[in-house]
Image (tube, rainbow, N blue to C red; front, side):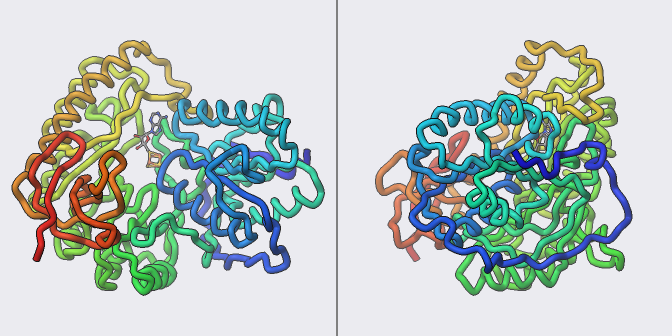
Length: 476
Ligand code: 5AD
Ligand code: SF4
């Protein structure tokens, strides 16, 4: 095993004022055809940042002439792009690595790669070195652009290797993308996170907050428009702090959004927003442009001021609700969704009821809800907890019932209306039924044809259910 660099949480925690370096992607022209006659498979866990990274890795792998397979038994290269945000996500990956051990015995030439956020954790590396010695390459989130060099090394030298960099991070431009969709695209606008919410591992696994220069983003979006893309989703752990790291300091997320809206792309979405940085000028931009979608994902995490403080979220319940109301005032049609954690150390029943109260008052139309999962190296992992596993599960259940009412109410308001839907493909369950999303990000099932895939069509909503809407195509 060639251990070049292991992750270091102490280094990963550091933040300096050094400006972010922008590097051009090295095309790896000296390495070619590594995958001629070979097949690959990528498993992606976690958030949209990982999905976007997978599209880059996929492009790099396909440039080497590997072809895609969906069968692990057939694959010569298996890459697992991992998520470290909760223990359940990590257990899934270790389970998969365990299963792949026997495959590796049958096919010793198969190359197994672990990438993504888990690689950035010290504990993962120790576990791989002791229990999962069949892994060939471990790389982290900062050295994705180097992947082909690692692959070449492992294939020619027949060695295993680990290289995980715990630096603050730079930005690589002109990376290739093998996009999953022909009409919807992820566009990274920034990387990393400087918030250090006390429960969260992301600032350690993805480095310091660093924004891409607007010229690169605008050029990427213009190229997507030329290729016929209808929708972009701007990605960042906290898109509202876009540009705050620029030395000039005079161009923020609302400016970027406004410039992107003027490119004329049909739909712009963005995620994730931190409530503390959500400015009134941003609300104005969303309200002003028809192609900025009226769906705002605004993680609140808790409705209790005591818990919010312990989480280091930097706002109170009242400030959050005030923001939500300012959004509804200027964008009356807005759908707001959120993320909530229950069972944070010391969360009392009273704290939890504050969360339930906030959910009702904020009129959320959806929420990702989680039981708190301690992450080694984060401050909250050292907090003593008074919440039993059963209590946390019970709170999650009660919260989900309330959240589901919000989903249904949010869908009900479209019954009888005509809405615009970007048709994505055939529905998974019914023949000749197609599905897509409305501007408010509601899933719609509608009878139409292959011809509509990738188009924005007008649909009359006939029935609202908790998770989706049924509708009929409006012929013009
Ligand atoms: N435990 C549970 N949920 C977490 N999240 C982040 N860290 C943890 C953790 N340690 C949730 C937050 C965040 C979402 C992406 O994952 O709600 O917004
Ligand atoms: Fe994690 Fe908080 Fe950063 Fe979101 S804002 S990635 S929850 S530290």
